[in-house]
Image (tube, rainbow, N blue to C red; front, side):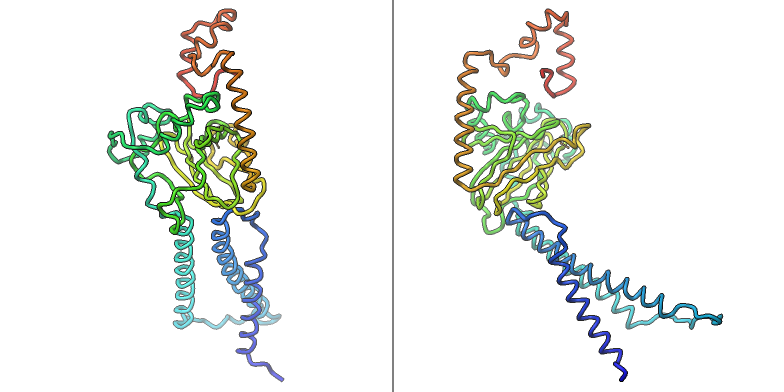
Length: 371
Ligand code: CUA
């Protein structure tokens, strides 16, 4: 019995669809999805994977079948039949990809909107002031901006929080503290800075936790303005919306946690931010994703997503550690209060180094001179 070719096509179509659907969900290419945002992004990725698996199998399958079935037989030296166009086929192969591409773009806009990519939030607390103009990286930021500088010193929430945090000895004890831009004035040049804001249903609501994050060659520093705790690891509680304010001391760095499926640049002289809600406890790598110098590859740290209780006790531990530090510092010299020349004076005299020399070194780069 001869099976009609339409039945074959139908069967092959069904098998291709099933295989594509299965592979789209089971490709195993992505690490754990540790935030609510990651789940949405993965939905989009899996859809694209399904479509491209189907297309790949269809196109490559037809290619292999055609190459085998229409191969040259021995003794056959005739030309192939000339074929000039096929209007229905051309309409089909134009219309189908157009529909697929349109569908994926609508879907991706929807995902981007849901994770807060179109949040209008970022304009209101990014003013520029004299202090911003003088902060590290302001010259770079100025070249990135076409808009006129807004001189009016309006309210800056991040600045207030940072000022409060600064009063805490824990914050003051961080090396390079005076160079962390967000503590002088919140960066911002009056242009739209890169933002992953709150999801639309949380628009206007404050985040559950704020972490000020500064990138510098070659480390990340996390400041918790509510408690003044400063850490080199990012700890966040599960199920709470976290706002990370990003700034950079020297060059562009980028906040990237693969398990969060989120990436955001940290730009000198300008504040960017990123919001997310962790959903899966665990330890994840946080990797700088912008080539920032010879040790860029080593600019990694750890993100710890933990239960609210574990997060609370970590915070307590950090606070008690910080207050012990502060006690020690009340006795010892506080390097932050001295200029590099003053601080180095006892050593430079022995080494025969002139203070002008130090001045030059200090002006030419921002990373610490001291080990
Ligand atoms: Cu910082 Cu790469």
